[in-house]
Image 1 (cartoon, rainbow, N blue to C red):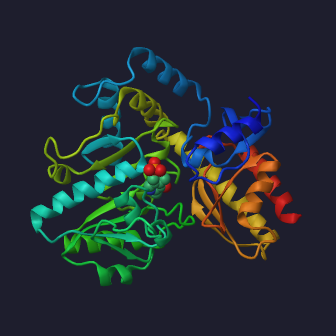
Image 2 (cartoon, helix red, strand yellow):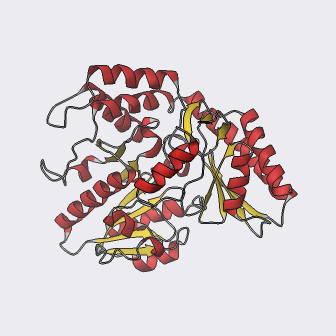
Image 3 (spheres, rainbow, N blue to C red):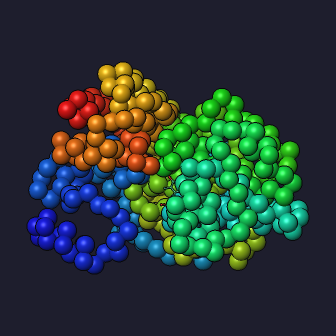
Length: 398
Ligand SMILES: *Cc1c(COP(=O)(O)O)cnc(C)c1O
């Protein structure tokens, strides 16, 4: 089928909720993608921070194929080894006590919110407030969309679930004002992704932890985007020396197979009894077999050191571009391989820059209209960074 035919077919039948770029992707290899015309793209988006091991990674393909040939799904009424293994690995890595698998990030956060509410109810019936940050992103289900501190996502879906309040990220005084003994949980992205790539500043997260402890509120870190090694540590919270009561993961956790997870302390876990929560597909052996490959590869010291090094190299190169085009790029932010370039008064809009890069064979992303976001596969090399920097330089210099 030709490209035109596929555009036409999809445009006619698919729910029109995504503005798509006009290419049809067919296959991938490492950090590269190919469209149906055979055009090659370097992929610095990784399916939105998902393909942490790149495309067509042989051990991942092998694990998925072998598991598919054995059994894909059996439900949570039974035990499977891939699930038991993946949960054990997450518990060990996080220093927390219990893991639960879901199918997406939103669903992982829903589970975290539910268990936090149940936990706090035992303390007091009115301990229900969930505090999240402005410019956060937590998902598209009704509760997680309400948790998302970007009002434009809320419009038209009211009435929204009650009990959510918002604070400015990196502003501890704002949290001090809003937190109280009625606060059930504070939920933050350890590094804000969708909202424009904002890492926590100074000891902000430590102070958040202290305020949570003072008021008996749970601390939930949403590491759906910043976890899985992207920051240079497996969990971004390790970078800041703060441990949450609950952490949520998804995106890169199974290298591209849909999955979500939350991990919590034993104390929190006790809030749920059999029947309180569940999901049909969650933790199925196919998704967990894929997660096991990620969990055996990414936490490796050398792998994480690579993320740190290539991330540092990439950031330096982006700062170089900022110095060359100070009128267009205002700031470079981020850690490891979650990096953002804040556009100032670019000659082209963010979306135009993304489109121009795509024409030249580089897939990058623009978030909130004004931040170029780079969330590539974690296996990229310095040479591949140079490829993208060269294309960006050409586009910005035009
Ligand atoms: C992508 C994302 C989500 C939502 O994940 P889905 O799998 O799309 O439901 C939640 N939180 C953060 C931080 C994300 O980046």
